Image (cartoon, rainbow, N blue to C red):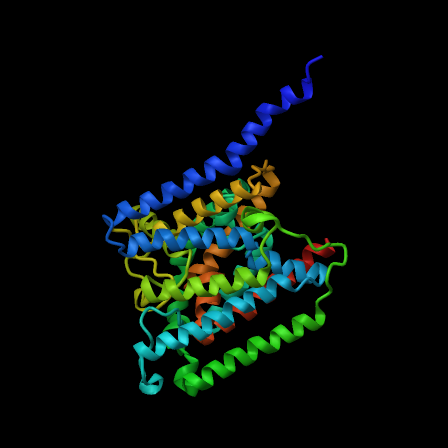
Length: 399
């Protein structure tokens, strides 16, 4: 009698092999060809943006580098590994950024800021925007960068969240002039090296981050049920279980240094904001002039004058890199979304979009790149963002 089970399982095995091997390789080759063609093989900013974006997408996907998720892991299960991974990224980025700053601005006390670094004004507006962003993360289930990489994992609900982000950016542009005149135009732009020198800034930052790491390790409760696994071969090591958080954090810190040195600081909202600003201006929904906005460093949101910007290429490549990684690891699982779930993600996205526009960036642009640059605005954003996340999480648990 023929082996029916072997006969019927062959097509399934073939599809599995296609998804985990052929498609990821095809996507990777496509990314490389696209990157090469963008600048005619010259290795310009667009090419580098694609390569860095794809690498960022892989690192986010493999290490589950989501600010909301790792914070929730700690709040619910005292699992501090994800937060320690973020601290690893910040320490690595801090050291690299300060080395680069010494080349650009030899005297940090001379009143100059390093070019393009995400160092923003500090006021109550920043605190409110960061708080709103934290609330939005809790409602939508991820930060903006995580929603982008989860598109590559088949998380269709992230589409609703990102649509909300676009709406939120439009609302942010509509309220910008009022908030700018109320507080932002008089707010100080505080940069630690200007106050303490580079050596003092490194000591302050690494001391704060090291202290936070010690507290997290003290509160950490390891999951005894998670048995250690052994990897056999390179493929299992890369696309078996998720990477340890500290590995992802260190690699993201290195990628952030490379991005700042060659293209721009890491950020994922400049293109989203530019699309919203261009659409709002086209339909005459925004003020004719956004007071002082284009003079600040951060995730710049100019009206689009080109089809593909550097940040746009970075974001597209991020999603494609995450898709290739998820397919190779078997993490690509399209999800059905209910109306109620989509509404929550849309609402959270609107809050994140308004907060990111008003704070001149999100958890990547303002928090990650800002703290690496020793910007006080990055620390303020981190505190009030986590506060908004925590309070919303508490209210959701009580309900």
